[in-house]
Image 1 (cartoon, rainbow, N blue to C red):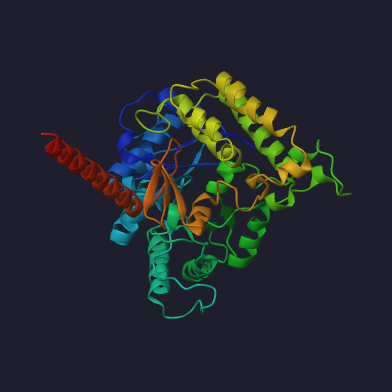
Image 2: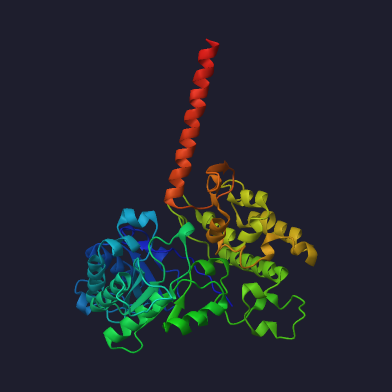
Length: 444
């Protein structure tokens, strides 16, 4: 089964000033780890205590003397975001940019949190691997500069008091259109380094990256010796990645003799019809839960309301089918066209069902969505790069001819490609202006 909870990628330590306490008491399941982003030890410590105070079941607690502060609540730990590669992290001086700029500042934040927080609240950090780490063809114990820096950062975090470390096996540069295969060898080296240096044979290291299918979970654990596995993008499209059963294909007639409701199948093992049934079911389940547990307004920023968060998740669940139905993709993407869950059900979900449920097996094979390994949201950037064509907010950008075909469909590209698109657009406007001026001169 799958579970759904409203979430944000991280909370900025400077955004926890004020606000109503009721907003921070909705989540009652645990263990729960809250991730904070920031670079100032004082601010991070205050932010962490704000969260603890608003979720503590102990009233009249001693908040002035942190050494005597007692906590009983759903928060099991505070995690420091040292892995975010987005531009906003550079501006805010946190995430992967802070780690690249000053690992020592990261260590000071972790150390301060460990000193200030109660003993029963863990402190952890999520990091990316530094540039230059070796790949599978290299010796993990080589004197590679990237490997040395990775080991130095792991030791520094342990010395600072980190109780757990999550490591994403990609560098700060491997983001969006530049995403490459995850470096599990670097994660394996981090696991080995942490356990040898801490002298704790099971020091908790969580591996992150490269988890596309259910079978990848055990592959990653076996290869890296990590304590656990984290997934981000794959879960946004398939929340059942960690599920042990595949409940959504039991109603589909199959030719296999296997008990399909007792096993979990990778996407590439599903028929196109089974894949569609699964994604539609996830979407319906999510919309049902959104009625009971509405996402908080502003989930996607100051201008993003509650339904914008719902809209974002629907794009991921239904990505491969919306890519085949551009008018539905455009409809869902228009802020004023669909603004409620009821409209989303009838105009998107039900419409997709009416189009795909009547397809024959032969018709399914003609759809690009039938190729589960290449049509997924998880691989959207890699497939665009492979074809030399990238989906941008301005339209399709082809590296082959260097032109942007402006359209109504959205996506994401790197900063460099965005700059190139903008330069081309500016040049086009200049050319058009010169042409108009020339025409005016001829007329006059």
